[in-house]
Image (cartoon, rainbow, N blue to C red):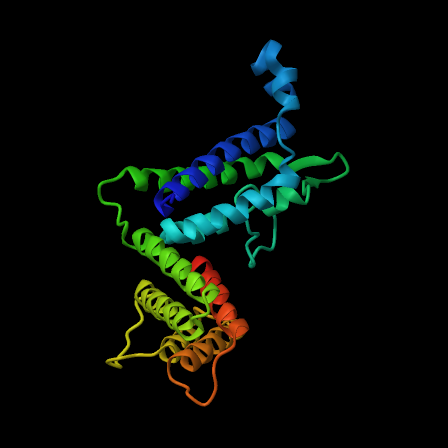
Amino acid sequence: MQSNIEKYKKDLEKLIGKGKSLQMSMQYECFPDKMEETLGEHAETVIEALPDFNKEYQTWYSESKVLIKQLLPDRLNDFIRHYEKPKSRKDIGYENYRIEDYLQGLEVTRGWEKEKVVGLDAALPHFHQQIAILNAVKSRFESSLFDIKQLVQADLFDSELSASQDLLKKGFIRASGAVAGVVLEKHLSQVIENHNISIRKKNPTISDFNDLLEKHDVLDTPSWRQIQRLGDIRNLCDHNKDREPSKEEAQELISGVEKITKTLF
């Protein structure tokens, strides 16, 4: 089975490569004559192969955010800042123009003569910085200081959820739910640690972790409710003898835990 570390490396290489192609596409839109001159006789072939920045950037951005959030979370806000328009912005200039403006085709001119104040090229440095942040993630892989604890843990969780799914297929519903519940509890504990949230209870439950994460604004209310629901199913599988958990409930628990381990960090 391919490890998460290898998967992250392949995803990262793919995103960096895609980013370089998108960067060339942006440069061509901003400076077509200069780029054609630079490419010379190869210009037509290269330009025809370039991706459509406006159509493909958002997918690249979303996938890159997920990877940075997992592997280099202290740079996530920087990555987002290069895309989003500043909320406090009153006037638009080169210093506060963002990629979001570029995607909207925003250009600012002054006076009757349409003197250029800021154009699409103002987004180029921001996209360059986003690619640089992705390259920083790559450097982290190659550094001996890289902490692989969470990546190894993610591999373990995948394995445990596969075992839970196998138990469910064989009809061991309570055991299946119990295994998935343990994964959820371990993952929430790690998320608490990631966010430096202190917990006083000696043996905290899923509900305890869930409440703390909502209190510290790590979770929104719908996510809190979802985890509370999964915790209730786990308790039904572990403790409740009044009725048997259904196969559908166990499957809901497994699927829900798998999603949370991939999206909540």
